[in-house]
Length: 198
Image (tube, rainbow, N blue to C red; front, side, top):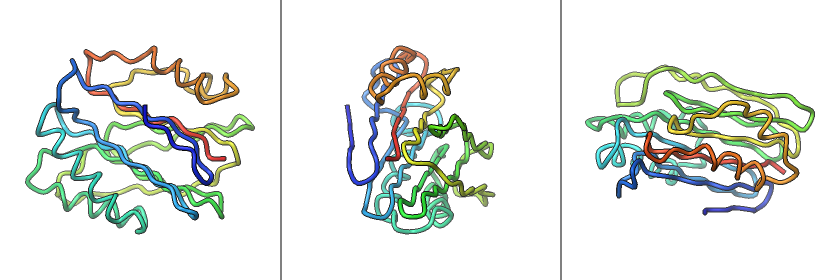
């Protein structure tokens, strides 16, 4: 299972393709510098090879342009999806020094941020998907506290009581095992990333 502990971030990521299909329609990417952490999750429409191609293009764009602001990256992702099937896309970029994160999402991807004080931040996504057509983005900026935890997941994961899961355990591993138990590998491609901003 991919694991990162670097600078001011700790996270686990897991991906399960529907019915063990060799092509997973979800793709994700994350990286951390001294100044920021960025993560993208893309869910290609449908499943199989064409869904994978759409979501993978998004990851390639973010990998190449992670230094840009979130609005610019979303626009570049949208442009790259012309003549492809399309994808739901969510990007989070956390700036360590200002303790702020910027979030933008188009489509059915869920994101939650839980602070140690008990505050839950759950930005609502814009409906639809990126496909190269003109698109409205709802990019939001939030502050976060040290040791805030977050969960981002594609719609293959059916989860309720997220706040309870994120607050219940002293370590991320405990919350991770709760989430793993909810994955149904026959329902859809599923990707989730759980992390802590230290």
